[in-house]
Length: 69
Image (cartoon, rainbow, N blue to C red; front, top):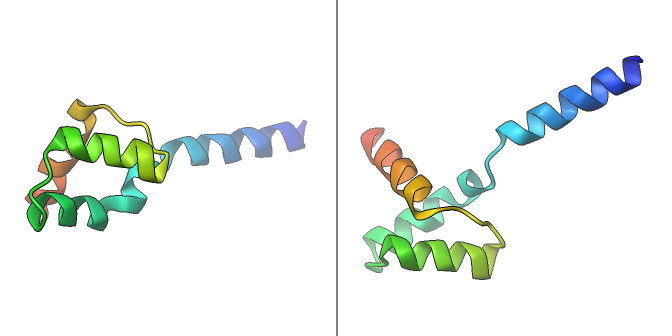
């Protein structure tokens, strides 16, 4: 039983990690330095980084990241 509990905890921890966070600085650079639209960033993430994210999620994250600057 303990193994199952540990496996579940590991899965839960992995679920909390968002792959998009790994590309935060690249995303910010695309938007700020290269003038990429959110739609273009969503396509870039899917095509180049194999990260599937909605435009609304990206928008919320960009707002959150810009707030912390």
